Length: 257
Length: 162
Image (cartoon, rainbow over all chains, first blue to last red; front, top):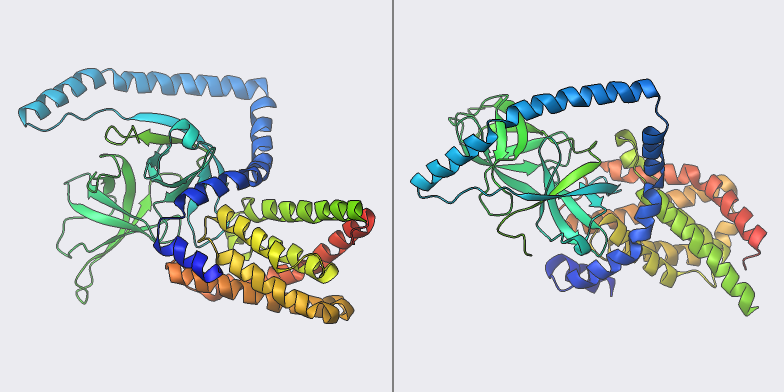
């Protein structure tokens, strides 16, 4: 019986619906396990000295001013971008809608890099939906139940993401290593122009991830004459092990799903 | 008798639920490989204490819940915990007369077997561990066995679960 179950879940998709339903049933466990971190968060927000609040307020005002200053030119730049794209006969880039979600659990199994979010099918989350935080791409949704969803992080060993070098547009595939701090870029020939410190952004090829979100920064490039390809490691820009508030992106093509 | 039985089951379920919560509670990064197998520990205790009531069937349901919680292949923990329960129910008469540390030794073996089965299924899926670190929970669980035993025994006597 168990062998049948393992085979069915591993090789066919027929159990997806059942899984979604059963996942909803075990949700309370995640809610209870999340209580300590919610308490500490509550404590952080409610038991703060006046001085700290004032400092925070001051700092946020300054940040806001800087960000506003930077966005002043956004509107005209965007319009210009759309005009130029129209000239090139390519489709206009649409701004993506996002949904703020909170992380309520981390996969307890160290061989799996997955997190659980507090938004599910009820809020329109769908399988394959990309997840970002303030600094970059985090992963994609792999399971949706009624109130929660499970996200596979980009560093999971079973995950790969198409990227390109922001500096020159060289395309590659970044695969997870199972460690939260590293991605590996595979099958890049030794002569390709890719350097330490290069920013890798999502290339949008494959149609799953939207274009242009930062993914990782190249930390080391080894060119060994004995190997056909360069050995490239990169560090994810997103705070995969620290972010609590994350954004689910509704891409224009799949938003109805 | 029937009422007492229902009452007893409530304690078993509550302890399993607590174990499940402990099993998914976030741990610091240096501890993740050593996370004790709480569900397995609690299950072994109940199999030894109430072999006529808790056995493979309870293990299968607890295992299913763990598979869902871990996002594992359905069947990984189910299989591992069912084997664990089967062995504990078969060994309960011997285990009851063992000293605490002898019991810990057996728990180490049982949970080691549990980990091996989990590892085996994970390798089918292609995500298995690349080192022997996956056996670490067997050690941490064995060290925690006296604590689990005393807590659950206290609960069982307090609520007169039989």
